[in-house]
Amino acid sequence: MNHSIPKVIKKGIDKICAFYKRHWPFILVFILFVGYSCCSSSIHALLFEPSDGKDFMFFFKKFCFTFLLASLIALLFLNNKKEPYIKPILFFIIILLFFLQRFLIVSFGRAIGPDVLLMTAETNSDEASEFLKTFAFSHSSLRCYAECALIIIVIIITEYINKKKWIHSISSPYLKSIFSVLCFCLLSIGIFKAKTWIDLYKCNTTETLTDWEYKEKTRFSDIITKIIYAVKGMEIGKNEILSASMAIEKYKNESFSCNSMDSLNIVLIIGESGIKNHYSIYGYNHDTTPNMSLEKKKGNLVAFNNVVSPYNVTTPAIKNLLSCNTLSKRENWAAFPYVPYVFNRAGYDIYFWDNQKKLDAGGGFTFELNSFLYNKYISSIYTAQNDSCYKFDEDLISSFIRYNVNTKKGKHKFIMFHLLGQHISFDERYPKGGQFEIFSKDSVKRKEPWMNDEKRQDIAHFDNATLYHDYVISKLFDYFRDTPTIMIYLSDHGEEVYDYRNNMGRKFDNNRISANMVEYQFKVPFFIWMSDKYKVNHSNLLEQINKCKDRPFVTDITFNLLLGLASIETKYYNEQQDLLHKNYLPQKRLLMNEGIDCDAIH
Image (cartoon, rainbow, N blue to C red; front, side, top):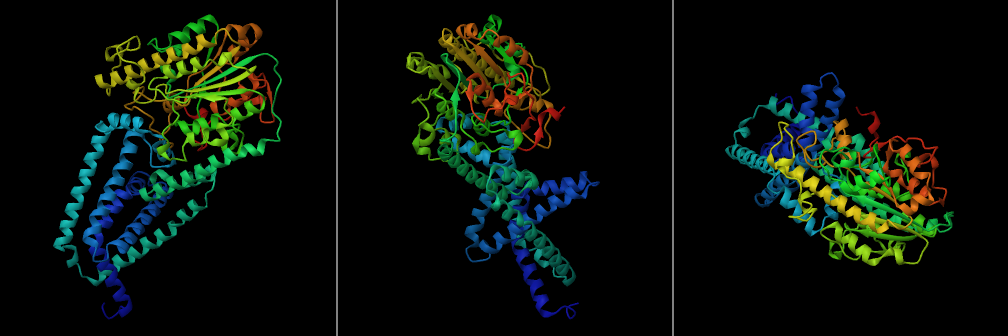
């Protein structure tokens, strides 16, 4: 055999075998733990989906790409005298990346992506402290710590085997040739699959990035690809925010006019993480919304029953809520006017009180939602805004009441509130030891197999936070009661707190989305409230609103409802998307910008 193989090829085979004999522990650990998703998916497709070889080949190509990455890293960093110093650093990075990936998946059902980096960028020191308090020693974290300990054991065992050189004793030319051909095939497929990075580099809009993500099934990629994808998403987000901010110049010559001669306050309240099925106005067995229920009984409030948010995270939900785009038409939020800008051009004064506003300039993040809401171009639209944030939403509302918008000049006012609502941690969202600490673990009569006292208490905390949230909203009812005011309330997205499965938070897997997932993570509380003075001047509207309360609706087209109520004429208004208009036509309600039709899920 030795004589049948040309010397050049034999020398090449020997070098390949020597390289992999030396570095197989690192490459194996890299493939198993950095390429965990694509490796496990390949095995799953092979074992459980034998009828469809397409899935297996797709994941196998990802596996080959991970093998290529591991080989290149070993060649570049471990094939020199500094290897004893560099290898521990590389192993540490692998463990850290694996922990990050597993923690996100186990705790939130979410892979590394732009939304994760965005939420991290939006997190201030208080939120980070709350997050660590909630999750540092949670069951999910302890599980991930144990898995990382397993990696360390694997590293120790493989390095021990390598040190003993048991594999190095394999010298059969036949085995060497077979192994070299196998490596060549794996590397060739990996090089072909590397085109995915080129395709990713070409993405320049949220839509093209989403198409790439859908095509590549990013959740099943190696961690390095996920990180590059996340950074690319952040870059695109930054550019879209800049484009949306600068686009104000583009709309200067467009017509926006208000036809109403009457004084009017339009109030938009954006809640946070509200679970529709935990609001007693929707039939929940805990009396969590007594003030809303009272207003409903008086005939001032109408709760809508079939409203969904297109996203289960804050940033994209609010960007699309406050833009005149329509997601069902695949329109990008940055390419359309900012809703408050339209109101401003139509002669409305704009007030924005935001309890999630970031005041610490040291954050330095330009990719987050607030870098758009508060950049110099957008800020010029606001007549006034809050200059402080508060632990509890009541204090934000009190600061607004002290400002006393009702005494300010201006016939038409558009007033926005963005509250902390029921944002995790729930027990931090209401004052302790008083009228809002009503529910306890003993109040929660849940007996599912996964339920225990700790989880019952989490549910009680959420319900107490909802009760407090209802009180906060009631302060606005009272403040605007004697003024011509119509109020629209909605939550940015839903939440889960052990409602139908053993999960708290928003685990989402678009391959396993269920009706329950839609019900709790995407369906949101949504109501319209009218002051007595407003009802006198719009006596027929209450009847119309009641007729519309069961219409299917998605919050990204709320701007049409707002423009209709404000009597603003603009080419961006579409009566077929106005929830209260007689010509309203239900839109396709797509979730997560991934073409998931929530009404097709049963």
